[in-house]
Length: 69
Image 1 (tube, one colour):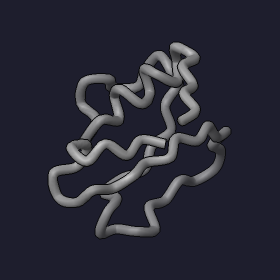
Image 2 (spheres, one colour):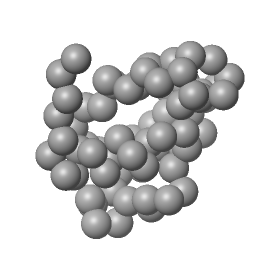
Image 3 (cartoon, rainbow, N blue to C red):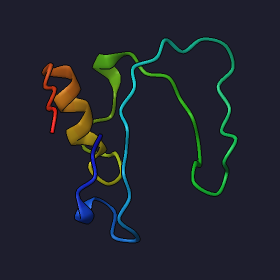
Image 4 (cartoon, rainbow, N blue to C red):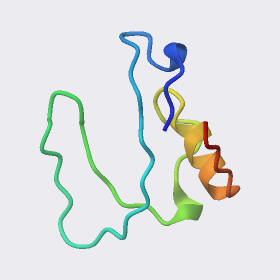
């Protein structure tokens, strides 16, 4: 769970990172918050172009970092 106040300039929001196995047709249901949905192989994720602190979240996950607070 990421909840630093500066992670989103609009509001103090949280993000929960979950690992999924995605198959089939992916579709964004919340078109106000989500513009597009895509599945990526870990090596093809466009790190450096993700919003907010999502790059850090994925890097932490790939490095096996887990913090309990």
